View 1 (cartoon, helix red, strand yellow):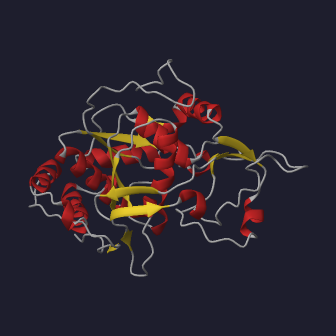
View 2 (cartoon, rainbow, N blue to C red):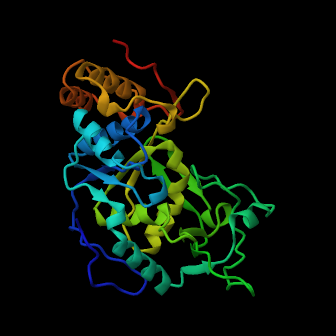
Length: 325
């Protein structure tokens, strides 16, 4: 695992990176339950993009939210990935063991006056008549009005640390969704990078992890599409390279809701070999790709030889029924 290089300039965090880094993709599940079809689609998509670029495929466990971590879930996820031929090409990174690099990132932001304490509660912010944040699961709410931007109001105590978002528009060309633009300061406002109860926020951890691991391409679920401008703003402020992005279709149920670990999906690590093949074929089909039946790695290699990102659906895709015996 890489570590933060000791040489740092004011306002920068520098990771040891080769001049011409080998392409690297990643799959970064949270160990809050077993792998399910929706996360398998994301893993297969990330693997296909990495292999098409002749790059490495890495796995990272995002376990900073300790209250939601399920014991043994990490082992179940890694076992399922092995069954599907999606093993990591390097050591599996674990966020909870990487706190020094997040601390270094906060130091770099603080050095550039891009970090400040905030005393606002979520309940208070929800009372603000402001446009809703186009956020992610667990990250919705009003755009931050800048209450503490110039200092904590009298009588307030720090509850979180916020990133002082630079003015201007962030744009990026998503492989699946095309050109996207957002004025993060106006539409989102300064956002939390360390929460009131201590953990580092997802937005900070994910960009620091990707930079430290040399990730050059991010393929993940479309529910994180709206996070990307915030992450690019952080990357630029930390002096880090911006990877390419491809946001993959969400797998939904008949009601249109995203399927997840709470939906009673059969843990993929418990499938027998024949059902593994059927489930992998279903994941490829949901990505608009196909492969002939065979061993999982053979199916992946076939799909890779025909991989066409232009066939990936932009909208949600309906989950098929569980493969039958």
